[in-house]
Amino acid sequence: MHRLNQPHHDGSERYVAETAPDLGDVVTVWAQVPEGAGVDEVQVRTTPDAEPSWATAERVSSQRGWDWWRADIAVTNPLTNYRFLLHGSGGYRWLTAAGTTDWDPPDATDFRLSAHPSPPAWALDAVCYQVFPDRFARAGRDKPWPPWALPTERWEEPPRSGGDAAMHQLYGGDLDGISARLDHIADLGCNLVYLTPFFPAESNHRYNATSFDEVDPVLGGDAALVRLSEALHDRGMRLIGDLTLNHCGDGHRWFRTAQAEPTSPEAGYFFFDDSPAGYRSWLDVPTLPTFDLRNEQLRRQLVEGPESVAGRWLQPPYNLDGWRIDVANMVGRHGAIDENATVARTMASTMRALRPDSLLLAEHAHDASADLDGSGWHGTMYYAGFTRPAWFWLGQPNPEVDLFGMPVPLPRFSGHTAARTVDAFRAAIPWRSYAHSLMLLDSHDTARFRTVSGSAERALVGAAWMLTAPGIPMLFMGDELGLEGAHNEDTRKPMPWDERRWDRTTLAAYRDLIHLRRRHSALRRGGFRWAHVGADVLVYLREHPDERLLVWLSRAPHEPVRLPAGLLEADHAEALLDGDDLHATDGALALPGDGPAYTVWRLDPAP
Picture (cartoon, rainbow, N blue to C red):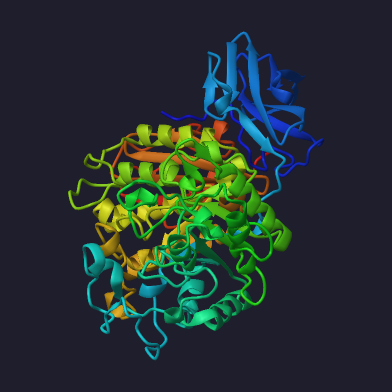
């Protein structure tokens, strides 16, 4: 059943005149309501200072089956909630970010305008490529192996599994190796590189830093990061790093000082207690002692001011364009203690002062809505609102796949359930936070989506979803080559630079989808609304003042979808990928019914 006969509003430029307002601004918003829906008046409710206030909307046009209603709302608070009350012969209905209801929904699903400082404009145009430095490429093996390492000279050797063997295996990938392979990333169309940690550490993943003051010599040291940053910026590309604010490694100078000198300032950086290890650690992993971020000196060291870790690497000669924060959901949280918002806001303030165009992203594996008011983190890694519904809709049962630590097999969602999940998470956060979150199918911490999906065809349907949805799409190195892996150690196999091992069809599809996104403003900055949802098919609109696109995703053959041309505001549609143009017949556009498959059409310009 199509969903085009529903009132609609979202936080994109087609429906909101100013998406980055300041306090005191008056912002015009529009809602689109089907003609004949029995809506005779529209009121917009805001809650300035937490007290309801009302603005009357004006019907400004009626065309092609739609009424457009316009209202002006005052941005009184840093986060301004608003919703539409639709009233008339059709009854009493609310329009919120969760859709329309004939009952009173809680304010948690209100639309929101954020007057907090805006994320950088470039982020909406970004396609991110994640690199795990030890496994991407190596420029040379002239650097000594650290004493803890289990060296692997042969690049093609499979990763080891289990415990210290997996953690200490080093292939010797380095930053100059990344610089040497930038043509591959650029040819794909990616313009943002995200590096997992580059600080010295006693592991290949480097999330147990022994210092935040230098680049790991195994990666080439500080000079190699400067070379990589310059090479990326010379190409018009950007670079973000990965920082652990929740913990460091047990070999870090701060922690060793704290253990050796209980009266030292560093002793206040950690939680020492009567636990088996004698101190609080991340998920009780003793090599990862947890920071006590109530400590003001520690906050100055990590996130506050130009000399902090967060500030130093944004400045010349390194010039990072932002940070992704590891396990950001746990940062500053321990029992009754919660310093998360303080840390996020402090770091955001430091970054704005040094680099107003820098990006701050938070890793969060489940519901991040409480942390995404826009005052700190710009967005999250959208595992809960995108990755999981994509896995559950397109995935196939596989007992070897690690399902985000869940103690159950992979669920099998219908398109209806997947869409409800997407809607619920999108409605829980401001549009701006949603649009600046990383949309990903997998990462260095998960199984490969190619393995989860069980087929190259379904994997590409997932790629099409990721690259045509709102948010910042992020692919993990090698996804574009068809790499597989059932768990994170298998996922972290080295990039196969022998092109005979590449899945050329997958590579071409990724390249086409990324370049399509780069060419079309609606895919980068447009709104989102469902046009049709079925068990095996998802169809949605991406709408922007410049253009309107229709996206069709199919996981399996299904009944062809017919969309009413009037409500779609289009009599024909031009295929932008493989597929046929669409022409209205008997008042409808007929979409294909095959699958797994996907395509994108450009609709007639909106009136």
